[in-house]
Image (cartoon, rainbow, N blue to C red; front, side, top):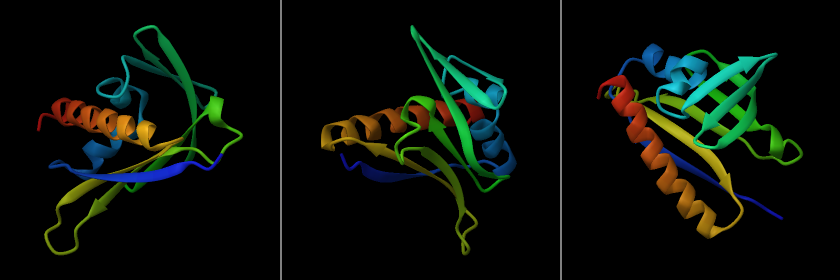
Length: 127
């Protein structure tokens, strides 16, 4: 089955270091992405109401990007990624979220979920 890769761009009015901390640390992710996040032996465990998922960091460059892979999708080319992009002219910061879906319905659900999650992120940052 081929997956649909999609990317979403969200303007974020904050510093790069504040944003990257929220994207890359268990405490930062616990503020907006999941109810709680723990890390042990390089495996992040995400807790939501009645649900637990585990992920690993595939790639990371400080203050630039971080890429996670859910452990239950390890055999697939499936990950989610956060990229911090800075406009050369205006120096505005945007967050690019890349994810995958199995079909158009799942893609639409993913877009809605990421939009809600990024609103939570903005609230956690105070913007």
